[in-house]
Amino acid sequence: NAGVTQTPKFQVLKTGQSMTLQCAQDMNHEYMSWYRQDPGMGLRLIHYSVGAGITDQGEVPNGYNVSRSTTEDFPLRLLSAAPSQTSVYFCASSFSPGSSYEQYFGPGTRLTVT
Amino acid sequence: AQRVTQPEKLLSVFKGAPVELKCNYSYSGSPELFWYVQYSRQRLQLLLRHISRESIKGFTADLNKGETSFHLKKPFAQEEDSAMYYCALGGADGLTFGKGTHLIIQP
Image (tube, rainbow over all chains, first blue to last red; front, side):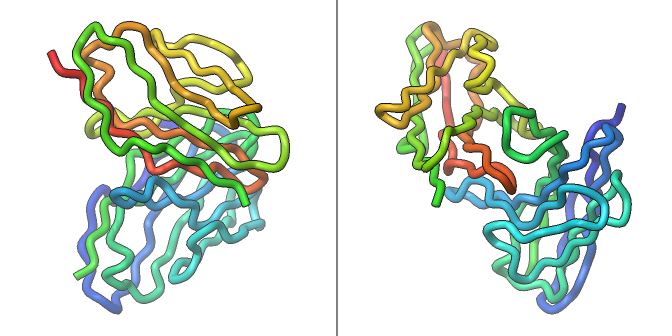
């Protein structure tokens, strides 16, 4: 099992550009989520999905879109990049949100918006 | 609203000394609490969860509902324990993380 994979590892964007961060998992997990990690802020939930076709907003959803067409994939789209979106983005998956199930994290995507 | 507080941004201890990383939470229901660790240049990984009451890599954490705390402890620190540690609270949508504590073990 590859676990949770993310591409790209690094990305530099100019303000106003759009892009999609890819996330895939091969563990047949129903729950997938996106977090951003900022210095001194910990990790904050952007969007999550409890199954194919079902998505919902987390704590900091503005400026991001998601969709879940398959169980395996959960891409995160930046519609019009802003410097405030400079961050490290982590995708995670689990059998169930929260609860006692372990969440498995991807290696992260480091995004810089200039 | 649920909240997780880790009061120490940075904690530096000498090898062999005891370690305690503090975590307090705010939650109206019955909490599900976790400690995640991020070693340098690696992804976050689960260290332990309160429900399993296990000891991983010598670390333990006890849920104290009266004090709303879930402090992480290890009696004798090792250099390989140097990492970023996050306390997290499980909810219906996902995890609420604290801001993290950077643990540095000095030789």
